[in-house]
Length: 142
Image (cartoon, rainbow, N blue to C red; front, side, top):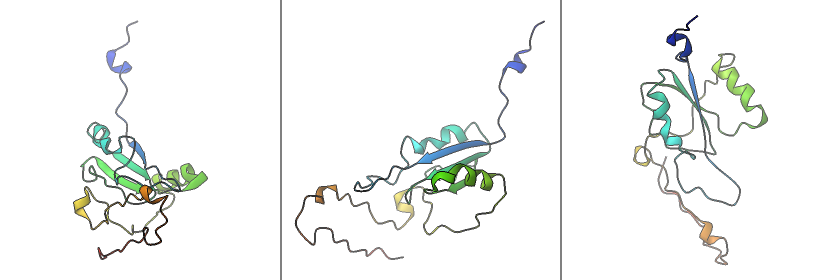
């Protein structure tokens, strides 16, 4: 009995989930607003999947250059949810709960799309004795 070729090909998924993470740790500054580990390459999945849902785990703002891709149907900013991350994300994706909230920041495609303060890498200040070295004056506005 000959198996048809179509039976061997995988079917197109109903939804593609892309999970992104940005590294954060105490005592080490971020060097970029981009997602880590090739997170800007969401378009590689979205170009072949018409219903791409992106879940971001981040310690704050990220630049999402693919945010307006027509196949990216949802972006869930899960931040750092802890041990119940899987359960809570499933509840949102399956419609058991509606997060119905607003982010306190803009989802930007590039740094120029928002009024982000530039990243200040202060790792060179760790060994200073200057009491004013850590002073940051935030003048960028709302």
